[in-house]
Length: 572
Image 1 (tube, one colour):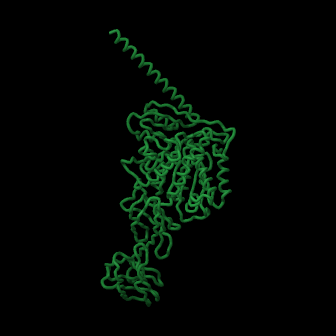
Image 2: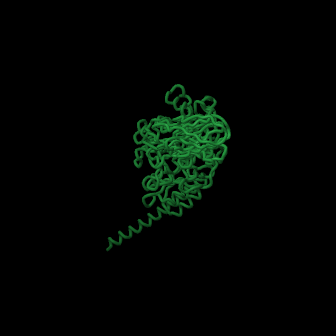
């Protein structure tokens, strides 16, 4: 009895001490968090969720940064942190990485982070040093009035050529700095390697490449009187996560608060680019993240998920050959790649915005577990990733490429291009209204491609695609012309459709001249001159023999002094 009493007493004492220690730890964490919120307007915390999966409401409150098992790392601004405290979850504060202003720098060796002024000078120097290959573009201003800069790299940089557009962008989370320097290195490599390296020369000759090294300059150069990167933070100057600030395909507009200046500038700029392929570079993990971020795979998968997985593995597999053991291959991933929501679900990501609303193909590439590493390690990350970066650009060479034009005039047609029974969730593409050029990136297989445009007959064409090969497909679309009444000034009407033993037409014309009757396939290819006659103004009938051994659907086009007249004809 005495032993039992002593044991119970000791147990009570331990429980009280543990409660007091837990309370003390929580108080210490709270004080640390509030100090950081006061000085930085954001805090990074780590906590565990009680059950499997991340509660969606919690994901909506915080800016989730990583999830490993039940452990969650997240960022919060003051309002988000107050909401998080209502969950009464134990947490610990992850202190920010702060580096002193460097006494010496080695920008030439890429072993230093550039100051903001050095960054501006470097971007200008790229254009000045390579004016025929590089153009510097300012897409807008950040909340803190810093420049959001892009360079365009192409062999005819001042022209808009009919070629695939690829976009790379980095560091929309200001404290994830590896991609920032790697993008500068990539620009330098493309410009200095052109004309010397066959792979780089082919990329610059055949692509329109856009690179934005720094999407959140205010976050990267936060609280930096010297202009150096010493105290970077995730959020922008207003305390918003820019990768939660885009329209979301599942929840709609403004899931992450009012659109920020950086977001508006990026959306407007990307809308003009119409990139067929893009990548968004981050840090804090080492993995290739593909859509969707917002939908769990059990709910919706992207129709081209196989293609996303294929290009993701190509990037990660190449990294595995040149990086250290375990780099870009976390245990919870599929050998270096992951579905976004399967890792953790978020709303308002740029990846989902581009892929759904702009009909593009974007992945998020996490380059380093350490967000703001020692700059001396930056050349190592370049060595691990440089081949994969170039190979990723090459992905735009593959799939189906071609032009969509008017069958009669040759003018470009902005057609919607879809794969019936396959495409959904914004996965179709649109041909360029300026030149008719299109790119449809696809995993290998046999596909049917449907081309539709207002005022044109739809066209469906079978096509075979192989991985890492380009399939060329040019499409000429036939305009639809409604049959006017026979008393109009210019009209031809087929008496029987399908025709019996011959083509028999009734006509009404207003001008004398020569009229040609030509059969076209539905893809716009002329196949048969049926006849040519000289007619006087007025009404009449015509008859032409049927062409031998022709069956199926065609378009008959009558051309003459008054223009073109077309009609569908079925031959049995």
